[in-house]
Image (cartoon, rainbow, N blue to C red; front, side, top):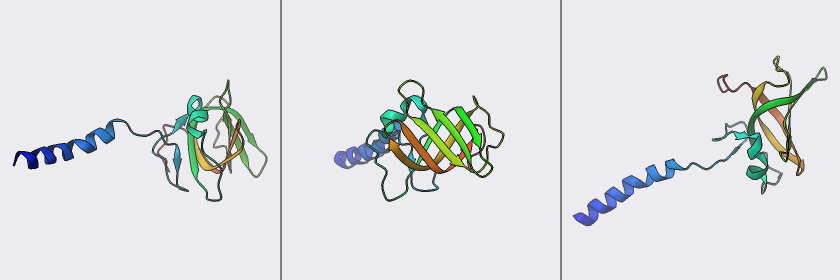
Length: 133
């Protein structure tokens, strides 16, 4: 009986331990929300072993905008890139009145042309206080 109680008690403790230290994973299947949104200072470390593959994977990051450009068809939102952080470019369809300096969360199809540049295309951008779409 004590052995059964010990197994039940130990089994009940396992999920609590797993919830204490969730993995920082800013990647998700296409069009799904990742469990974690990276901050600019974390991007290099969280993406260091991630290759751009044949299958789309989405990536999410939150930070201040350093670039907002609309060419009449596409909008380009740039963030991160200070110090040793890779630059992140979100390719989307509208700026939603976002301005340089606004803190935004971007998420989209992860591409990595080089170690210092990430392209999210297609990408969605929103202010962190806005409800998740």
